[in-house]
Amino acid sequence: MKNCFKFNKFNVFLIIYFCGILFFASSCTTLKPKSTPESINFIPPSYSTGVTSNNSSHDVAWWQSFQSDELNSLISTTLSNNLSIDQAWARLKQSKELAAKRGAAIYPNLEINLNVSEQDPLPLVYDSNNWSSGIASNYELDLWGRINAIKSSAKLDAVTAKQAAETLMVTLSAEVALKWNEVIAKRLELAVLQEQILSNKTMLELIELRFNNSLASALDVFQQKQIVESSQALMPILERQEKLALLELSTLLGSTKLPEINTQNIVKLSPLPKLGLPIDLISNRPDIKAAESSLKASDWLVAAARADQLPAIRISSKLSSTGESSSELFDNWITTFLGGLTMPFFDSGQRKAEKNRSIALSEERLGFYKETILRAFQEVETSITLEETQKKYIDSLEEQLEAAENSYNEAISRYQNGALEYTTVLLQLNSFHQLQRSMIQAKEKEIAYRIALHRALGGKWVEKLIKGD
Image 1 (cartoon, rainbow, N blue to C red):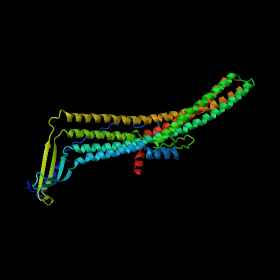
Image 2 (image 1 turned 180 degrees about the horizontal axis):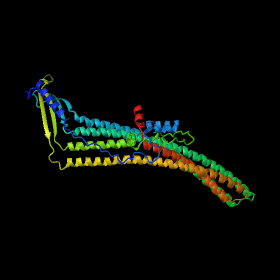
Image 3 (image 1 turned 60 degrees about the vertical axis):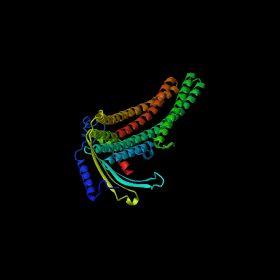
């Protein structure tokens, strides 16, 4: 086989030189997305209430402020074993690999092939063998930055996936603390209710004794029996709520085994944490950072869609050799070098529609970014307001509880002396029992509001935790 093109070092030099010039030119004129507009002008300079300072204290894991080794262990286990977090990390790996895949298009690809064929058409005819090998390369000059834009968008998608995983960690840490707090509160309610049932049964025995001595009516006995039964009816409800909270907690921990909760009292709250400034939310909340990364990724997609409307230059080259035997394989070389310019002419508006769709997507994500910031600010303000008003409510409950206990003791004394109807005693007893349970529920909510505040503030503790692992 004769050479169609004689292969020598000079030809190779020309090819490499020409490719280098075009590769350099591809980085000179690229389309880039517009800068992300400042969309935080609506954030006030400070919060309307609470402790505001220029320095926030959100670099340390927030649950450590509760000073509970048990809670620390539960959250640590959750962040290590939770199945939702495992899924989030898997999504992050997918995003990273997709970014690597799309970024690879900016470099030439190279393929090597080796073929052997044998022909035996007729008897008594010599066999015909054919050996061939070659190296082929294809490359698209990224003159307008289309490939780079796609790569940049994919990288930002990976960043978004990482920040989504961080958001999930913040959410799960708060949910674990809430369920832990709920279990403790329900057990306290059960303990108080058991004391109330015991007290009600003792009172029933006294009333029955008075009834046998003609000092109380049958109505008094029936009313007290109703009080005992109504108190006992609350037991399975509270037990159910405790069991459900434990089941949810075990799921968060990534286990089917119910966790052991040994804490017996609701934790005492420390003073409100330093809130920092509202503008700090943008750097402290991973969901806001995820929304920003997603917005930037969509802006790069707009740049890619615009570049796709412009001409494209594609280059292909091939170096091949053929022979009738393996010894002749590298004797005959053929080099092929092709360059082509492709310009969109008529595509029924597909590229324009894709550009407009990308712009609309960017506008949507800009709106979501703004809304995420707005909701973050509102969540902080709401949590502060709820906790401050809850503290006032608890102070009022404490005074009511003290007054109700005194009223009940006074009513019992008067009833035993025959100076008061038992109906009044029942009213005071019901009020006292309800206030006891209301106090536990109020303290549970106060803790829940503090947890919600920490969740709303976010913090850089997630990034430090990931780096530590």
